[in-house]
Length: 182
Image: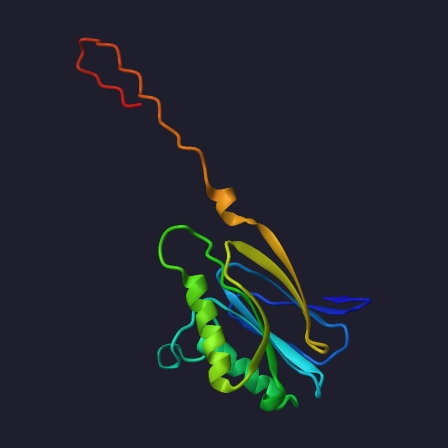
C-alpha cells in the first residue's frame, strides 16, 4: 500500500519487514507477541519482526513465529542490505499478559528478546513491554522512529458478570411416560 508519505508495510505474526526508503512505515498490532525494531543510523535502514513464542532454533527450522528464527533472519537480512551489526540499535515492544489464567507467554517473549539482543551485543535503546494492554505500532525503518498507541485494557473487556442460570421449568406430569428436555 502506498500513500503520499511513503509505503505502509503491514507486519503480521510470523513475519519481518525491512526498508531503507524515506517515509516507509511498518505497522503492527501486538498483544503477548513481541516486535523488535532494529535500525542502523549510518546505513539508514531498519526492520522489524513480529514473533509469537521464543522457540528453539533446533526445534523449528526457519519458522518466523519463533523468536530465535525471527531475530536471526531479521539481522541477517539487514546486514545483506548494507547494515552493520555493530551499529544496530533495538527497540522492543509487546509481551503483554493477555489472559489472567495460564502461563505468561508475553513475559517469556519479552525476556527472550532482551536476552537475545544482549547476547548478540545489540543495544536495546528503548522498550515498552509487559502490562495487560495490546499495542499498535508504527515504525519508520529509515529513521528508526517508533510511535506506539495502547489499546483498551483487555482484562476489562473480558470480565463478564457472573451469570447464574435459571432452573429449567419442570415438565407437567402427563401420565404417559413422555419426558421433555429443555
